Amino acid sequence: MDKNKNEKMEAIVSLAKRRGFIYQGSEVYGGLSGTWDFGPLGVSLKRNIMNLWWKMFVQDREDMYGVDAAILMNQKVWKASGHVDTFTDPLVEDLETKQRFRADHLIKDAGYQADGLSLEEMTTLIRDNGIKSPNGNPLSEVRTFNMMFKTHVGPVDDESSISYLRPETAQGIFTNYKNVLDSFYPDLPFGLAQQGKAFRNEISPRDFIFRSREFEQMEIEYFIDPANWESEFTKWVGLVHDWTDALGLPAENVHELEVADADRAHYSKRTIDFEFDFPIGREELLGLAYRTDFDLSNIQREAGKNMEYTVKGTNTKFIPHVIEPSFGVERAIMAVLSAAYTEDEVNGEKRVYLRLPEHLAPVKYAISPLLKNKPELVAKAREVYDILKKKHGDVMWDDNGNIGKRYRRQDEIGTPFCVVVDFETLDDNAVTIRDRDTTEQKRVNISDL
Ligand code: ATP
Image (cartoon, rainbow, N blue to C red; front, side, top):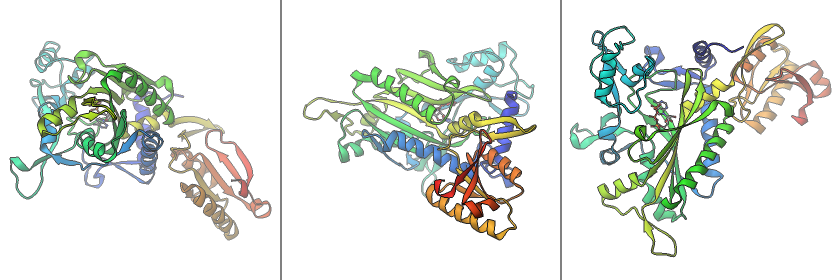
């Protein structure tokens, strides 16, 4: 049975909170909009996803190097990259409540196309079509709003001490390109990869973790000879699909949106937004862009440092071009949870479970003694727990409530296998293993676990 979209989203948000995956940030103080905290299971899921990415794109490849740059960077970075001037979203104000909204979102919500429109065109469209704020009030003119969080570094609050919380991790890669080149002199093409926090002062954060003000990115700048950009881009399209497969996302729910010329950043020659059918609708999961030599050329010009690559054994020099796959961790988590969330019926009773791929599940095995007031069962179950804990790490001891309740709880957190130690175990050294998806139970010898 498939719930309607909002109901499914609400069910996932509520499960995420109830079971310790994701909580509203600063919840005890009434929350802080656009921030989310990961609980014990959420942080495991997040790490499993980030480690999988690191393994696929860095550890398992010869042409990839990891970096971990500082979040605070010299303000010149953001001037040269264009973020100070152009990292903006269109903002409108409810003229009565003074609440602020993303103009393009209100336009789209009202059923019109907003992509590629100038501020004036948006203002006209809103006026001519009588688009109102969600509170039903008239709206102001549309203006730009810079999404970077500004701060000051050091004890003096003046122009020279301005810094920003990075709105993307990419610039920390570009600023280290020359360092890595000098240390390793890799053959072209090669990539630099980074995972880390990014901050955007989104005008209206919404849809659970989908649009947050603080989130995590996993980005790669893949440096290439511009002569090969088309074939390199095609390879990355394939690799992105490998990634969504590895997340267990059904291929039919992943879509490529070729971004039109008018909607692309001016420096990008080609961009594909990979969209996913989230419960909130089809939305961007991650992006793949051909960023040309825009960023390295900016650095060369503004910092006065040579960013050229010399092809080994030749005198050929050029500034490499860049293919950039940019992955959002929260959107990956939301996609994984959406794909995994399943309702069915077991023995006439409704059941909710997360059909998480085994390699992403926060808990791989839950171990229970059939009865927790029987010391001999508890001792035996502890033995099994210790064995599995050593082997797999992600193992949970669960002796709360009766077995049926334990199964339901483990189903809800996506544990693929529940292991139960009963009286027979004491005689035959075998346990019952129950499969999350089929609910089938098997007897297995402890030594074969
Ligand atoms: P959108 O159009 O949805 O605002 P974007 O095109 O601005 O996204 P990019 O700048 O391409 O996003 O950022 C790369 C990736 O970072 C996105 O595909 C997404 O996965 C993630 N991301 C961007 N903004 C947010 C956010 N506010 N909250 C969570 N993830 C985000």
